[in-house]
Length: 157
Image 1: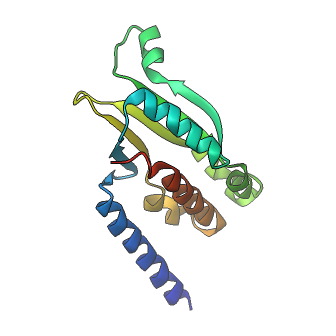
Image 2: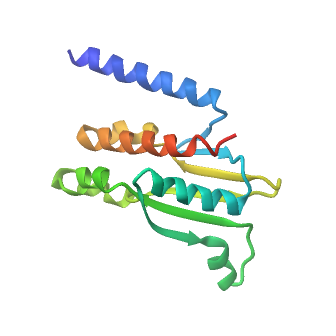
């Protein structure tokens, strides 16, 4: 029985990563980066609206360009959006066994420009490490990941 479950998980991840490659998803270890269809400001604004429309909460938006400017450094625009789905978060925070995963909460999506003049969206590649956590926390992390990917798909080139 365990081997069938393991095989099903392997096939699921294999299928997902094959699909991800077809969607021009560039993975770098634990990070995923895609080019946005929109410019920086429109990506941040419309992504924030889409997050709220799907019932997620934005807990903070960090303007790292502004933070760097205050410290005498100049960088291209970059904002990190912290988003939370209270249902997913409760599954982890409500169980002492998984509270050690709390540094990964809330989920984060970064929107930034690069020197090539294009806007990008990046986030953690949760499927790459969720199995190391295991149990219900793994399931919750994957659910949250796929939910956010659903939100992001309309923005990705």
